Image (cartoon, rainbow over all chains, first blue to last red; front, side):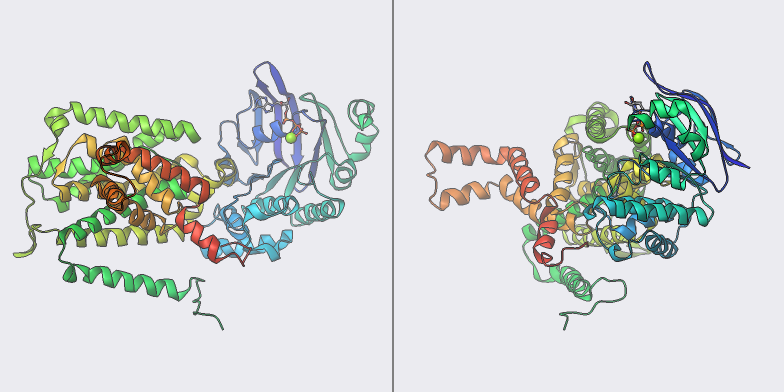
Length: 237
Length: 357
Ligand SMILES: Nc1ncnc2c1ncn2[C@@H]1O[C@H](COP(=O)(O)OP(=O)(O)OP(=O)(O)O)[C@@H](O)[C@H]1O
Ligand SMILES: [Mg+2]
């Protein structure tokens, strides 16, 4: 069953079509890779899906709900959570407090939120950073904090925007394992990533965006052998 | 060995003990202090702490820098005093009415202004407060305009037939102020340890991240404003009753809004005791300026001759220059103690520990 349906979504910034007529579906439990060159409109699509701004045209259906016009907080409550390409730690709050803010989406009890937060902090491997201020973490740990925080909101669908961006190979590998672990506990994911090897490894299906349009969709083998994709994107590497 | 025990919540017992001793001392103080001037300064400090704590909830914890809180201070004060003076409603009912009116107005203003972010919100809050000041100046029937309202007398506070106080001295105001400020501090502590407190701080740290983590910005900013305004309004009522006079240029002025913000910034915003420290520093300082004590001291010390041009300037103009001096003080604090006095002291004491809290 489709957990997310994107139907003919367009987003215009003045004359610029950051997304134009994008359609695809996601099945529950899968990992969808979303790739494309810089400026292809990947982050814009995340912003439209999560209610950061409304799409100019088209429709987004999540878990049976029409999402158009919903604000990010309502989207989060429905069970969809996103991380930010440019990380947004709550800098002057500790790691555990950051994750608790996410957990408080589902409970009013600080005690329960703290337990939930500690669990997620250990899942992403920040167990030795619990009381550190989020603003004091290096980039790799900030990215993990982003993931812990959204996991704490108990999402059905997770949108990860370049969580490996700026990380060294060892850290990237940890994130890859983390994404696979998250898949194993049954959370559906859409992953934006520039690292081709990583995206091929983790994705069940891949959507390629180029200049705002959907260029191709298919499983990883189909994508690497797609001529248009190779020309537009992979060839350029 | 550690110097003092830590209880389960992680707060050390020493500060708690200190606070208890301080509160006890403050309760006993009027029995030993004869000087009404000393009591006067204490009461002004108490009121300043109450309004600072109020602002701190919105500005310090939620990160919404209102520079128009005089509006709520004034609305609270005017409501209480108008009700008492023209409708003969005793102030211990009036203050609640003041809170209700101030909060109701705040929610209308908040719903409009919270769409704005950063400097735009600051400007809007200043503009709104100016609108209130001009309105109070012109609604002469209600507020008596620029002449203000002089309180003729406050009815004695009775429980049954027993007169608790007749408000003839400063002492009852001292105790009311003290109790209210303790409530304000306790409320801040409660907030800091609640879901609301987490949500407020998340909004302060990153509004977009907070929004995407399920926090309804409009609702929680307005809740923060309402909590904040409760104490600001209380401070306004208390101030009006204590001074016995209320007019737009004291309770609705931009000066006052700035002073509220300064109290928090100097003490340390977003901390429970920041407003306390800010008030303890700022109130005596501004009193000294106003009463020309500082200028006189400089001249008496022989640094500057009374007859020189500079000496003349000090004596005649310094008391009028308090806004300028506030400005300089603010710049110094922001440059050298960005987290206020409290943050500065904390940094000094915790240099060894590099990690958080
Ligand atoms: N708020 C905005 N206002 C105007 N233009 C925007 C806005 N957000 C994005 N754009 C433009 O839309 C296009 C798509 O941007 P987007 O950030 O979605 O690309 P992306 O695929 O995420 O790129 P990258 O890989 O660099 O993150 C770009 O040309 C960008 O400049
Ligand atoms: Mg992007």
